[in-house]
Length: 83
Image (cartoon, rainbow, N blue to C red):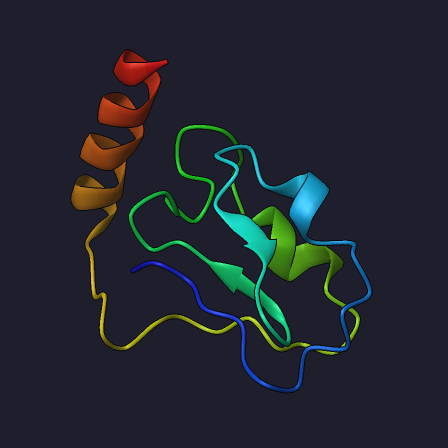
């Protein structure tokens, strides 16, 4: 599933540069994750890098975007083909 950033975000700026798919950007109030670009780092790393560096643990899975590992692999392949 794609990840999301909750309103506990403190805008510390550590997650955005860690995202290999450039899915994280500054929103109106907090950082946001584009679910169309988020693969939970599948294809790049073993664990989601934004979750690993977040100091306030505000990046859970997005319940509105449930995806299997296979779905995430396909999304990763499509993103890499588009680059």
